[in-house]
Length: 108
Image (cartoon, rainbow, N blue to C red; front, side, top):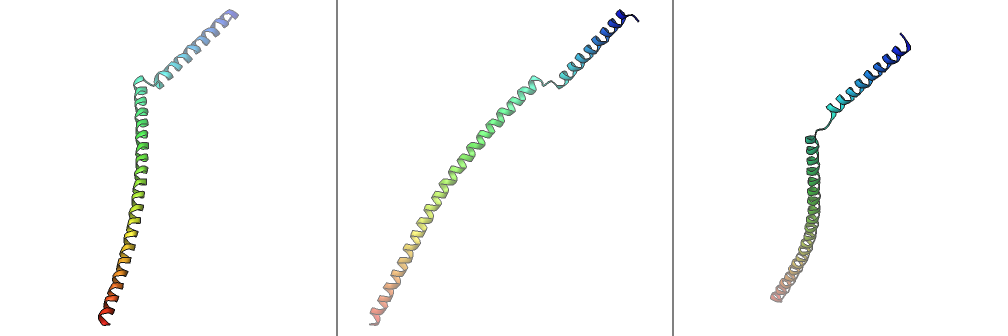
């Protein structure tokens, strides 16, 4: 084999190796490529997820506000109940005192 034949053979082998590499790269990208429908579906899913997160955040904020309102209302109701119970207790004591005085006036 002469030097020229060796160079030509080596060039052909390298060219075939290059073509095989390019073809295998094309095949890999062909099978792993994401289609535009998949990309659109992923974008829609991302948008839906974002909207769901916003809705969740709004719901959490609403629940926190509602909880604060109900806690405030409960505190006010408990304060009113305490005041009513104290008033009732005072009224009972006054009633007992009046009964005692009435009993004493009847006896004396």
